[in-house]
Each structure stands twice: as structure tokens, then as C-alpha cells.
Amino acid sequence: MTLDTTAEAPVPEEVGRLYDRFVTLTTEAPSSNMHYGYWEGPHDTAPLEVATDQLTDLLVRQLELGPGRRVLDLGCGLGIPTIRLARTTGAEVVGITNSHEQARVARALVEKEGMAHLVTIAHGDATELAAHPSGSFDAVMALESIGHMPDRETVLKSAARVLRPGGRIALTDFFERAPLPADKQEALDAYFTKFMMTWVGQIDAYPGIVRAAGLRLSSLTDISEQTIRRTFQQVPRSVVDNLPKPADVSQLPEMDQFGAVAIGLVDVWELGYLMLVAELPGD
Ligand code: SAH
Image 1 (cartoon, rainbow, N blue to C red):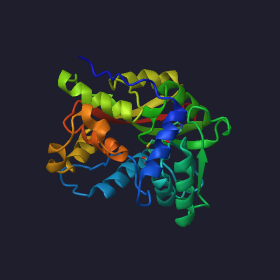
Image 2: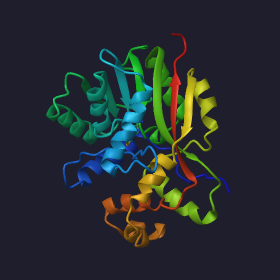
Image 3: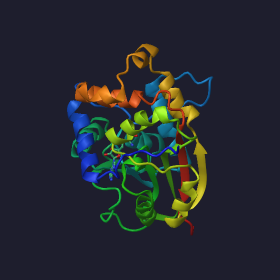
């Protein structure tokens, strides 16, 4: 059996509404990264909140940024990575999300953090970057967002258009690390359906997609052990043992449903996580 989900291709407006719901369902002020943690290795014992920043930093390092650079953050969530990128590099960043609620929260956070001189948040669709002239960015970051977008090649083409020659893109995505046993299929489908994602299949699919988008692949790395696997090790066993079956998840309160399908992947080590870095040729 191949790792193929029954999830339908996501519709951007619906993904936007899904993230609107997250914001309205979160009782405390929504202010966290919306991606997995990254730990260098067994010696790295950072707590999850630090490890999620470490994943941001890993991507940012790939982009070779500094003051005077302009970056596009595709699928910027609540703007936490967007602000961090600007603060650590001095680069100017435009964050784009297709959730109105996220854009509202992210803008407030930018103000609160005193970063409005470097960070702008826009509501929009990552596959339609018409507001941005060709070649207007030095770099693009897409941190755990491309899986929600209907077609990866289209996203990368639109990112390639706004990059200047020699500009870089860094992204993370899920992929099929190994064939999935039949008894894990339900958990995988529940996750991809609930979070409105499709996926790329095997990691080998990416070089062709990158080429078709007019980009040159710089690196493609399996970081599953440092990210998704270590993140799941943080989940207490008592939580894992009390997880409802995927078929029973719909009886939980709405916010708990997202947690349950996410934690439902705890033993699905066949689901991998990759980091890709590519460049627009012609510098
Ligand atoms: N990069 C952020 C958020 C990851 S969650 C972080 O790591 O914290 C995925 C993000 O992608 C959400 O903000 C969602 O609104 C955004 N997204 C998904 N599809 C999109 C699309 N078609 N256009 C713009 N943003 C999109």
C-alpha cells in the first residue's frame, strides 16, 4: 500500500476559514508557532516552544539574509516566524496568510512587538501574488504551509516569479518515508482531511516540481527525526493512551478534534518531514 490519503485538494478560501476558526476557538491570546519543533540531535533538550523557533531559525539560515533584504513569508500563520525572521536578520518581511483572523492577530502582534518598520502582514492567496512585482523579493519562506495549497508547482512558480535572480526559497513539507501499513491509514487520512492538506508523495517527487517551476534545487533533506518524531516524543504517554479512535474524534469539542487527529500520528513514523531549499538561476 502506498501512503495516499483520501483528502481532497484543499480550497484556499476553506483553508482560510479553518485558520479563522483556530483563532476564534483559542481561548488564551493566540501566540505560538504553528509548526513542528526542530532539535539538532539527542544532546539538544530544548522545550517545544524553543524547538519551534529553532525550526524557523534553520529555514532562515538557508536564506542568507541581512538588513536591506526583502523576504516573502508564504502562509505566515500568526506572524511569529515572520517577526522572528525580521528580528534576527534585520530583513524586511511581508507575511501572507489566507485567514482574515490570523492577519488581524498577526498585525496586532507586529505592532505590540514594535516591528512595524520591518514586518507587513497581508491577507491573500499564495498562488496569486499579483500585488507583488516580478523580482521584488530576495527570498521566500514557506514554513509548513505548502501542503494546504492546491498545487505545489503553481505555488513554486508564483514564488519564482517574485524572486530576483539568485534569490532563494526555503520550505518544509510532509512526504512518504516508507509504505504505510493498512492499520495506520485511518490516522493519516484523518489528519490530512481535518487540516485540509494534500501531500507530495515521495521525496523524489520534489526535484521535478522544482525544475518545472523554473528553480534550481540547492538541497532537499529528510529532517523527520529532528522534527516530527521528536515533537511526538514530547506528548505524554497518558495522552496517547487515552486518544479516541479516529472514528470517534467527531464527538469531541471542536478544538480537541484538531489535537486528537494531530496526536493520532504519534506512531505513524512513515510520515516524513522535509526541508527544501532552491534558488532562482541567473544571478
Ligand atoms: N508558517 C506559519 C503558519 C503555518 S500554518 C508557522 O509556521 O507558524 C499554515 C499557514 O498557511 C496558515 O497561516 C494558512 O492560512 C496559510 N495558508 C494555507 N494555504 C494558503 C494559501 N493558499 N495562501 C496563503 N496562505 C495559505
